[in-house]
Amino acid sequence: MERDLIMNLKIMVVDDEVDLEPLIRQKFRRQIRDGIYDFVFAHNGLEALAKLIEQPEIRLILSDINMPEMDGLTLLTKLKELKSPWLKTVIVSAYGDMENIRTAMNRGAFDFLTKPISFDDLEITINKTLEEINMIWQSTREHDQLVSIQQDLQTAREIQQAILPKTFPPYPERSDFSIYASMIAAKEVGGDFFDFFMIDNDHLGFVIGDVSGKGVPAAIFMAVSRTLIRATGIKGISASECMGYVNRLLCNESVSSMFVSVFYGILNTMTGSIEYVNAGHNPPFIISDGNVIKLEMTEGIILGCMDDFDFSSKKVHLNIGDKLYLYTDGVTEAFDLKSELFGEPRLLSFLTSKGSGSVVDLVKDSFAEVAEYSKGAPQSDDITLLAICYNGNGKD
Amino acid sequence: MNIKVETLNEIKIASIDGRIDSTNSGEFEKPIIKTIDDGCLKMIVDCSGLNYISSSGLRVFLAAQKKMKALSGTLLLCGLQPAIKEVFDIAGFSLIFKVFPERDSALNSLSQ
Image (tube, rainbow over all chains, first blue to last red):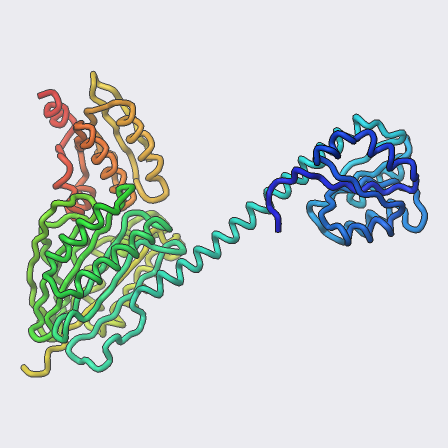
């Protein structure tokens, strides 16, 4: 459908007076020549309806009241049934015929003119009506655009969810570790992500990240970050080299000072040892035998702001049954109705009491705990959780 | 959130009160970036009234610092509450920003 503002207005004049046509063509000859107005003529209500079906681009109807076959008031009733928001009718009536004018207005006429028609007044009325039609036209267009953006957002959400791993367990044939993760975006699309991939048979790369801000800009930056980390990490280079390389690339991409905090680790599934780099992310927790320990930070900085930064890594060892619990600040910074934060102490005590179950239960129960805490308050940030349990290589 | 910008000789001091999150980071960004765009080369952001900052807020700090660096100006922070300091430390911002305990020590550093 054409969506530009209407520059060429098609007007239908409905009147049984045949002399009116040459008169109007004469009075508005300049506008007709310049293509501003285009006139169509009908001589009663029925003919008017037929022409309207033939020429749906008619926007304004100028109708007499007393006509054979179908009068102007009946025509108005029929037009109302069409429910076209940008078809306006102006009624022409004898001066002082207030009863018919009121009836016409009540049946949806936009305005009225009185006979004998003043052509100056007619032109003012036509232009006023055109303004109104254009306003409706424009708001309809804006509404359509909004609907289209919302559909795009929904598609973006599906794409975003699709690039995150979603099949669990991801490696059903492996018993040496179990992993589970989930992300809930605060808006349609989010800036959080998680990912994991086998670098080789004995090394699992895993990552959690949080892009500054939310919504579409964050989602695009998230997709770029996640793809770069996966493509780089899967080559089998060290965690610190991987972060350094991805950081340099992201610095080139970071147009509006966007950045991403990332925790990247490589689990050696033979030994349980993890090499990790913390690039500005909340330190994860290790749950071991009912104790919850915050992982030591590495000297790091968020990715995307200092291209020459040299990342260093640290190592930690998971015993059989130990779990690593990674989260984004949407967990600790979930608000309740009194604007109180969920906070790290609450998370710690939750992990201490509920940390002994499977990784699936751990992640699901965490979401439930946060949801229960912030009950009624809107989710202010994306929430992402990733948990890994080391089960041993079966050879010890 | 409230932001107030004062002038002390050629130094601009922006004091922030309240929370900066994704809903209001734009309100925080505008006056900060405008101050730099207007030619300020010495700026202190006094964070003593700041009690929460999300990553959207950190992004504004980073954008301001990048702009200042490009103009060879100086942007200092002061008065970070412990929770805010921790957020800055985790993000590695302590490597990019000079942070002073309170406003006077930041001012002293600028007048040297």
